[in-house]
Amino acid sequence: MTCALLFPGQGAQYPGMLNHLPDTAAAATTLSEARATLAAIEDLPEALDTAEALASTTNAQLALLITGVANARALVQDHQLQATTVAGHSIGAFGAAVVAGVLSLADAIKLVHIRGRQMEKACADGNWGMAALRGLGRADAQRLLDQVSTRADPLWIANINAPDQLTISGTRTALAALRTHAPDAGAGDLVELDVTVASHCPLQRPAAQAVAASLATTRLGEQNLAYMANTSGHRILRDPGRVADDLAQAVSAPVRWLDAMRLLPELGVTVTVETPPGHVLTRLAHRAAPGATVLHLAAADLGLEATSIRAARAQAQ
Image (cartoon, rainbow, N blue to C red):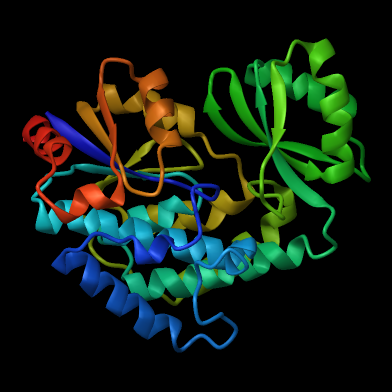
């Protein structure tokens, strides 16, 4: 039996999350390492995880990166969970790359800072957002978007999370029009997300180029775990350069999460463990791979020998 670690994306953050890391040696070391790197970046607040700070895309993404890595290391190093695969949704891919050995935490923090600032710059006029569309498959959703989208107010499919659950990026004007037309197209609902940017769409090509340029001068490590790519949904093995390409390009391309989760059972993965603070990826994994054991853990579980950790470790060995 094999185990995949899942790293959540933006939307899972909450105020005070960095104060709720597990009380383990690996988590403490990770937080200390992160603080040393963050101190050298001038335009960051003293605390990333206050409610006010988390309103910034950059701060939220950095907090999620640090939290994901700290919790994953606690599972692997302090609780001896034997993972073979990592998969991160959107910004979660950077945590996955760190745990897979491709990036150091310090380099990942620097890259995520660049990524976040460029994403905010692309949406600086405040007229951009994202929404979850339920009840339509990709083809039907694209037809609906083609009807509603205009040159001035575009819409794009950003995430393919489930057969009938997509995330849409676009202008707020276009998203409002989409909400009006969605019921007639058979959609269940359209729920606006608490984000101030439009991700995984052509608007973010400058961000992808900036991340790619920084990665070109970043020393990549030896990849020691399989990595599920956002841009293709495919597995990458022992090829850190391809992982780096995925990290750069994913910000301007749709996240093919459904494809990645459907592939896991074919690759022999029987257990998924979602790192705090997420739980949505666990539900998506259950839908895509109903025969797998899927778990998400509260941060408090990682400070002790929790039953759920013992169960996950036993099934992954």
